[in-house]
Image 1 (tube, rainbow, N blue to C red):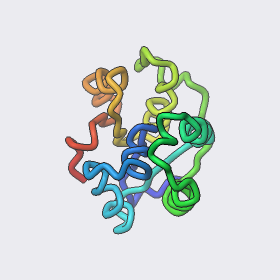
Image 2: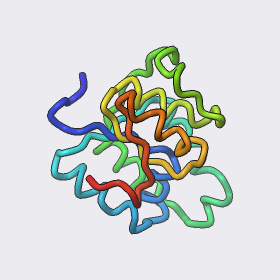
Image 3: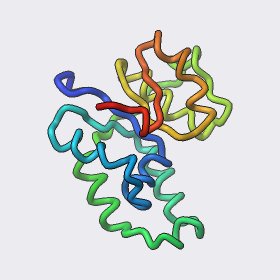
Length: 143
């Protein structure tokens, strides 16, 4: 199911927005790493649902996102997997329940890198490392 030749990447919604809507230069390395096949971006249905919802927010609409391009990029690069029950994440509980899905998926996949800007996620980085999950901001990530 998972391509173990490629490294495993999980992106929280803010990082996806940086990349596909805001065109933040810090997200630029994502394109190169996905294109060269060295990394695979894994997602769940809940992650897509969250992005769909966020793209309707007035604060996002002011950026005039090209939703067709967002979903075309998602279809090209996102590898959809079924989420397993959250019991795996018991040692890493996020104070923001909306962000727990990203931690759960990174733990489920094992050996994953989770890119986030969310403080509630980032504060788990030290505890996640022994569990095989690297949590970083896009700026600190070196693919």
